[in-house]
Image (cartoon, rainbow, N blue to C red; front, side):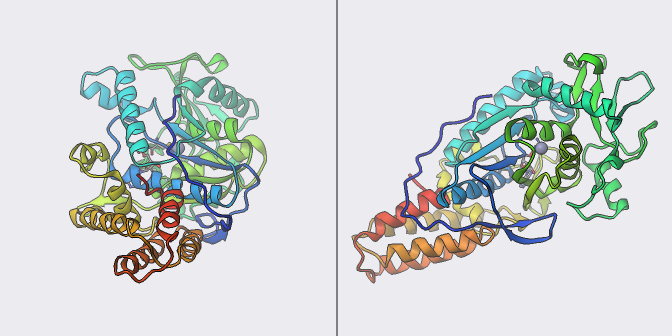
Length: 412
Ligand code: 5CA
Ligand code: ZN
């Protein structure tokens, strides 16, 4: 699938640092240690509605990782998916009497525009579930052949994964079994489905139903893929058996990332699938998680249409740490706009305090589990000083502009 156009990234003087990130599996901050290229998989949108600020915040988080690795001298192989076939997409299309393909294409196109406006570096591969079906079919057939997947004998053709085949199942999310079953039911799973070996077994392949789209599944029979196997297969096909970061919002820790890792590990025999499982906090509105199903959304595209500078939006979303669940408010946006204006004014000053010191400070803060609030504070201090005429480094405004652009994605 088509990605989106890349923003320019100005070169910085050498000195990029090793990035440390919080890993959900180890429940702590650990340095990343990628080979070159670094490999990152991020769970992208289900395109049944426009991208809201929660999606934007999560994508900005992984954009920082991409930028910091590049600054440390790595090439980055970055894969993001689009869940362009799934129940919620079909349900929304049916509700609105719309063709589900047209709905998915329209919302994906809008998402690309939002990402480009936010200066988010595009994935190397932007991949749809539908275009991945032949790969998914091949891997599900292998799981069936190996006896770690099974077909229900109720005539539906539905194929499930046997979670007991993954010996370390649960290592990523550390939940009690009761909590797992609850979350599984809330987030697209079917613990009560009759005929499964374990209530937690997730769907790999859904046999064709009347009125639903389907694709050839060779020996599986016609149908469509389950959700977790989609992300496991796309990552394995494009990044290989081990990746450095598996990412998304923290609503995906369980079951989605636990299950995709289990699929990948059983398919490859390698553990762990990802060196770091990285999860961004949820952006909420008036006390509730922003979500398409609740309808309490603030769209990035709506704010852009209202004339909000996407860079102010970016600064508003970077003002708090990425792992914090937080609320979107008008005040947050206002603060982002004011900060952007102050920074831009300071970049227009004839001189400022030591630019190299500011670059080092921003690198140091971001390398520590993406401490964007800390990074923003050091830029604030630099800007205040530049605006009050304290600095004597005539090269500083240009170097600071490059720093903000290359590391924080605040350019233009
Ligand atoms: N297509 C699946 C992932 S394979 C999906 O979760 N789609 S989504 O459209 O619901 O979300 C897209 C990305 O945004 C995911 O990484 C998800 O974790 C993240 N996300 C969803 N809602 C929020 C929110 N309120 N705040 C922050 N991130 C969010
Ligand atoms: Zn996913």
